[in-house]
Image (cartoon, rainbow, N blue to C red):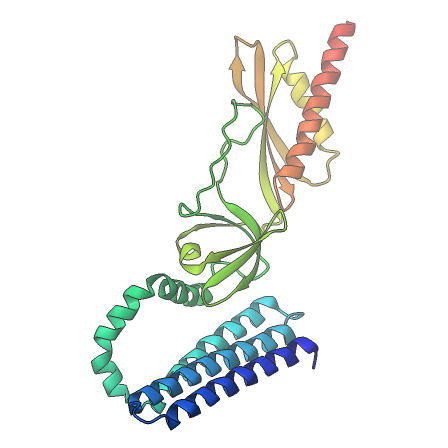
Length: 299
């Protein structure tokens, strides 16, 4: 048993002992209504139960950490959910409140508590929906796009080699799902905790595909013969082992003002992101355009 586990055990025992002493002292004081003592007992049961449930789930998570993360996260999720339900049931039972009384008398209380804890309950039930619907798994690389957490796409002057569109979202690897939050480790290695209610409403892009279509546009002077340029680019792209099949290369625009042609290159690349393949393809386009331009000047 490591020091961290021991400290948690000591903390739980200390909290339960302190609350028990307080409850005992209060029970010795005359004139205090019996209901007050019962409320204190329920508070001790709830506090101790929640601490114990969290402790047990943390132990399970630590033991299963090196195994299937999705399975371990689901087990921890279910253990906490079931544990909290059991603790609440024990608290009601200690107060001698039957199921019928809870159903009949819980309407008003439910409305009050629901309004007071609307966000928390929304995250809680959203977490349950995410657990069973499984729009993604632990370890998946996803992009989360949501209007609640606005990311403003940078506005630059239009460039022919830039993306056709930018997805304002958070991209990273899903690390953990709890009853209320989903933790994503972003590409810059910073973890972000997003409420489950936000995740449930968001657009989720799954970035787990081995192959992805990469689009690149590049402006070339119109003095360069398009046919020669396309053939040379195709020959150079064959040397890139991450490209699958034959890329599509065609003229997508012609600018008479700039005396240039805009070439589009669509290729299926083996990569987890667009950035690295796009960089290598642009290098080929720059190199090919430059070499053809030098040959023309020599002539």
